[in-house]
Amino acid sequence: MPRRIQPSQIADVLPRGARVLVQGGAGESAVLADAIEALGLERPDLSFLGVFIPGVNERTYGAEHGRALTTFFLTGALKRIGDNVQFLPLAYTEILQMLRAEKIDAAIFTASLPDERRACSFGVAVDFLAELWPQIPVRVAHLNAAMPRTHGWAGIPYGELSAVVELDAPLLELREGAADGVSDAIAERAASFVENGGVVQAGIGRLPGACMRALSRKRDLRIHSGFVSDWAVDLLEAGALTPGAPITTGLAIGSTRLYAAAASPQFVFKPVSCTHSASVMAWLSGLVTVNAALEVDLLGQGYAECRSDGLSSGPGGSTDFARGAKLAGGTRMVVLPAEAKGGAVTRIVAPGEGRGPVSLSRFDIDVVVTQHGAADLRCCSHDERARRLIMVASPVHREALQAAWRRYSEAAR
Image (cartoon, rainbow, N blue to C red):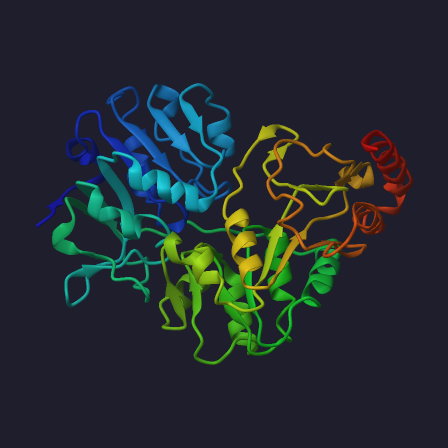
């Protein structure tokens, strides 16, 4: 039987020199994070790693006090720390491979209260830990009545836990922000590429969420996505989804409305080995993926990892879904506003001039959508791809982009 502890006793159950996996998304326990950060300069021997979602998982786990921390996304808090933070820009399937091979000594996470079979559910955060826990010797769970018992994955037996904190607390939430005219225009154009009866995936962010909500008038849709937010409930309530077909996902982050709905059999939670598997997606005929980018260049390459203040992300799941959708004969869509900073900066850029590394190659993007139109890049020459992308750029920047393409073409001859 697990040891029942208070949050302040967390250091007592973590082995000396432990490498600790932290569940991300709404599966992160703010209670346990607070307790670890309250240790201050104590226990510098501990190190942490996790898939910390920017805007949701903003804890540091004492990295500012010398504890090492490995992350696959750079949150604002972690950016400010510096040397003790190791940033690994990996795709989701690569993260899973790494964690499987890594020696992890302990895991901390939120789980549901045990059911009549004494099993605890990982709830709305099944992505990584759900299949990694058997290889991790120390398992510390925050058993929280707010975490719904979800369908699709067996969870963890109560007797397999090492220690538990039993305390009710709100789950972490994600607020996508209100839509505006630009996002509405992009969403309506993106919706035209989704047919009734199709399968859809969306990445994290306000713009992919707006694109999903724009599908409310469609019918018989299915969702296969590594992540869902409140838009999944919106589509369910609008009658846009196939009756009885599950919403397949690994991670749900949104409001309490989403978490209440997630307990329904309509939601089926699976780990990354399923949600991000190319071999699974290959059977989802016509899969349409909708992911955001920060910039797209005139070759059709997408940049999604670097902002004006530096690197903030790895490729996440977008590359996994791009490859899976290709096998499914689907459509890989990238959505973004055509400009930034009040129109002063174009987000359709000259070849190779996107900020940071290329996240999606020109072979991973079929359609680029801005508020000015949709550029379908399939089966196009280089010149035609550039022409179509310039047509969806801001009119203010089109002449400069045409000149940049001419220079590029002349240099390439």
